[in-house]
Image (cartoon, rainbow, N blue to C red):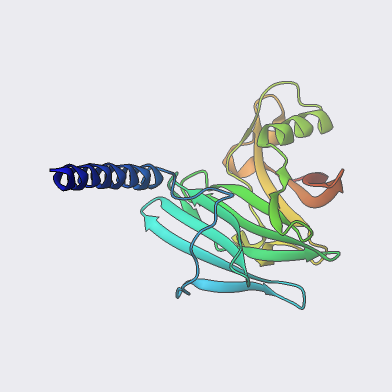
Length: 233
């Protein structure tokens, strides 16, 4: 009888331990798949992994994956398979493949989110490689509203100003070739203003605002600043 009670207790304890372990696994499965800081398993090489930078100090890879229509993912990692960036795009349009621009021994990983509808709009996604911390830090980009404010102030426009399209780059590209030899990003913006005769002469009369984005550092942070605004027919 003693032995029977002993074995019964053992069975009860074993069942409780199994249920407890299963509960732990279930909790783990409910965690997010990945974030900007969590490691991603890229140990097995895939056909769409590409080297985007390789020198004596570091080798960087990019992995671009189409999850489903309108949903894509970019992962940046180094030769030690440390994940430096996971970026998820879930808003239609498309992601361009990452590329690197080197400026005065500093590396910037860049790509664009692009929507090719009537507005042909895009968003800049630029990151500075902090080699000391081995991380990618997002570059602060000038807000589109702030650009329009600068335009109004520079050209003394009192009322509303509009843009017909998003920013246009050299040869309509969204890759390394849209940067110039100084590591700057020239752009063109089509603008329209109701009260200014020079800015509202029909579709063909819209002015082209031209400018340049430049990477600048302040207090160990990098910014994309606006330079050389000019108006052209």
